[in-house]
Image (tube, rainbow, N blue to C red; front, side, top):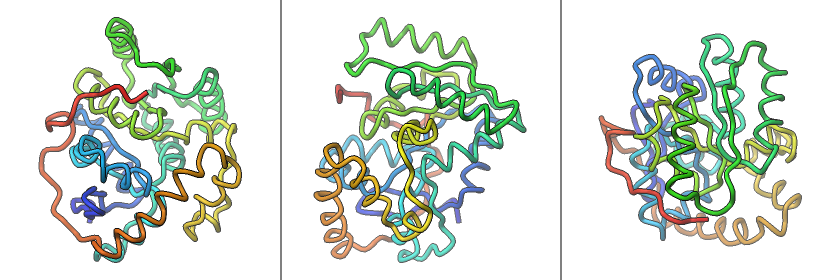
Length: 269
């Protein structure tokens, strides 16, 4: 199943479960491959309708996990009934459990000042033996070429297996596509607001709301100023477009990730 993808308005979402997502990351680490992972829901799909570069980045990713029930329902409708929701928060927690057992090393890139440190402390409390080798909160502005070269060298010197990126969409996707061939880490994963959620700075929706596809409503109520444009604009657009262009199963390309041609990063800050 996980070697198929679901074409959701041109964005190819990987058909997988949480366990198969972790297994694929383990495969990359064990074989020293270099891949990036997009965790994508309605927001990423709708942004990709007008941002061709973002869509190409998604479709060149090693995995595009279904973040949010609309992606899961799209997969089921396309003929992949076993697909599960694989959101950034849950993927980080499951990967942390595996990392504590297997010795994987993490680096956190992104989040406001102090967030990756609180995230690190929280994960170490939950998963004894977890190795977090470093973290960095970049400024909101784009880094200069010298600054970027310096942080790449710093990350490589620490030898993480996975770099978790919390910059929000589309900034984190462009960053991963730009850095997957420059960083020695086997896996880059863009998980956006999951940094704040796992750190405890932002509340997560109750499980029943997540299963019902209402997490967007929970987040909108708690962060109306920041999120109202995204949800009240994107959700209706998604429903209308998916009705006119139903999701469908497509074959996954054989060579994905660092070996694929993806757009270089642009100034999206």
